[in-house]
Image (cartoon, rainbow, N blue to C red; front, side, top):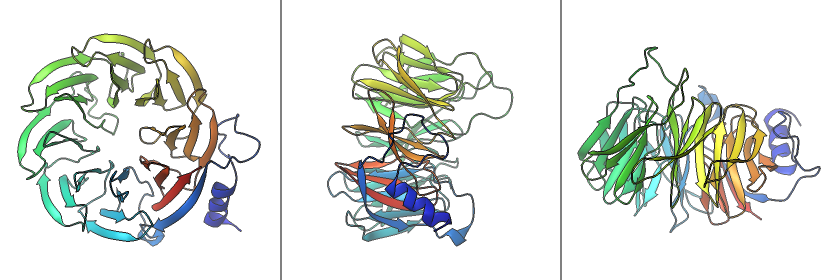
Length: 369
């Protein structure tokens, strides 16, 4: 057995770790999941860079899994693995879609936001932003908020797709002509929309009209100051800047509550009483109250999307080593799932079911033990 077949067998049957993901993997594989089914979405013969940046969204009522792939298709699968429908856009999907109230919202690299029927994939509307869209849409109070890779936050009517407002920050103080590719998805809480920008600022805007409520420079001095990671919990807003910091802010005022050095921080996730920062070379657990480090473990290979919490595990995508199952209290990797191509996109979670889109464009349904 060689090539992809061997890689898949190793991923499904053992805690194989050729890249040295963690020196503390258990000596024998732990039965954390079983594979319910998998589907090839983009044939290997299609060519192109085999990286799936977006990830999977799951409808909480039906359990239907929806994902966009690098060839411009959106695919919807029923829980048992049957294909429900497919829709073709003009380009790929750097962010995972959002599914709510029977509608799928997705932003494409072709510059359009698409709203599709969850039932049959029929197009309800599309909006031409004329900028490459790079984040998962946020939907709240009848509006859709999506960030472009050029640093524009668009607000659209969720029912019709009509433009409501937009907010753009020029990358002030950045004279090199380029920034880190990526965009933090907008977050919404109590009528306020939070967005991170390439000039190192976090901005809070009125969700109804786009008026700025506050703005705060959070980045440390450095060559790149992009804020590509945002997360919220009940009390704080967290931002990760590639310049090397993770910052906690008061969502009401923007006041800085604490800051912690995390070199090359790209993503941040808050949940289950911990804040997890993903950096280019490490994964760091922080205290939400004061930012003090709780643990730090090495991360080999380019980091992927924002980690997701289950009730027991932290699921961390990485382009090398695949999806890591991480113990939240210690940061220890207990197992990894990798079909041989790594995982960049966000996993989708529905109860004890986890959907993983590999960089080889295979969708896997895992049932947690």
